[in-house]
Image (cartoon, rainbow, N blue to C red; front, side, top):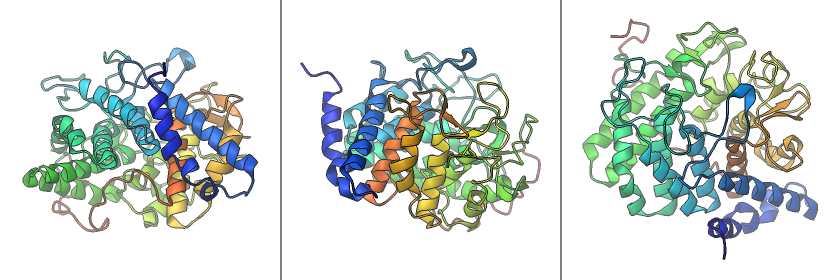
Amino acid sequence: MPGPLAGAKERASQNSGFDRNPAHLVVHDSSESIDRLSLLYELSLSSVECAQDPAGGHVAGAFKPWGMEYKHVWPRDQVVVVAALLAAGAHDEALTALEWLAEVQITDGVVDARGIDRGGSWWQNYYATGEPRWRSLQLDQVGGPIYAHWLAWRETGDDAVRDAHYGTSRRAAAFLLGYDNGWGFPRPHQDPWEETWGHTTGGTAAAVAGLRCMAEMADSRGETGFAAECRERADVWASNLETYCLKDGLYGTHYVTADRPERADEPRADERPDAVALSVVWPWNVRPAAHDAVQATLAHARDPTWCASGSPCLGRYPGDDYTPTRGVEDGGWPVCEAYADVVRWLSGTDPDAVADYVHEHADEWTTAAGLLPERVDGRGRVRWNSNLQWSQAAYVLLAESLARGEAFGLAPAGGDPDAAGPDAGLSPAEPEG
């Protein structure tokens, strides 16, 4: 009898970019290249599928750095996995993962250690059973699940998918609407790397995207007033992104990890460029790839203090010491390079960036088992975590984007990214009230 993943693999075989038109995907016209790419795609997709617990959540990876296990479920990783499964046509598995997110959403009246009423949000990560583990607030793990719901609705074309989780997304959007700092920006939160508390670039972009996704679903259900409220708040936050998160930092002007960081890192989170800041382009679609602030940040992504010296792989940020030695090491993260390469591709800065990632670079970074790691060293060799589902899912998404000729899964766009929002007259430099 076929296993529970057989249907997904059959759909992926029918729907993936490789099997639709393999010649479209490969730059090098050789059957060897096609076969290798197809294998990497299938291994990445199979890895993602096999990481799904029977309860529906996807464990982050089979790894245990410093005693910190990755066998738990992060809503952020789950969102990227849902997008990859949808891109590959594995709709049943994607909807099961979405159902898991709905089941573990925090209910009203639950207050965390910082005194924040977390109703409508998600905890930082969970045991596969759904029991919460770490409990910090990350806005990419609030806006992200709304986005995953919207993307599933869009890709399936089924209003029943929208309706099944509408209450979940509406509660999450209500949490975001209530998390404004009174000056046109979200209140402080933890950055997507789980290290800094402040006004983060990546988390804010995800929150903006989540509100815009909610607006589309609310409009389709006739809740035009709520849709307008979500859109307006998203536009205000987007209009103030550069005011908070674009700094004169290490390399000149660029997006940073976070404004007003609570912790004094070295280099400081409000001085260093950050790879996840490039998610303002993909998937969150808060800024176009050619935007001046995006390009100012991208211009430094080949600096030797930010990327691997002997391989085109971007790190999280300069001075990153999240390494096996707990010291700064030469190297990079494949998932960070994915964000940068999509920006290069979409902006025309390097039209072959995604093709190079899919065809050449990813193959150089994989283990003998063909799995992308969390991190590589300066020469592109696997450094640690040889099976990170975030990396596998990103590969599937880049391959599918290349096959389609457009970035898969862009969130709805807003208005003019440089236009002032309704609250733009409130100075974000003022004390929060």
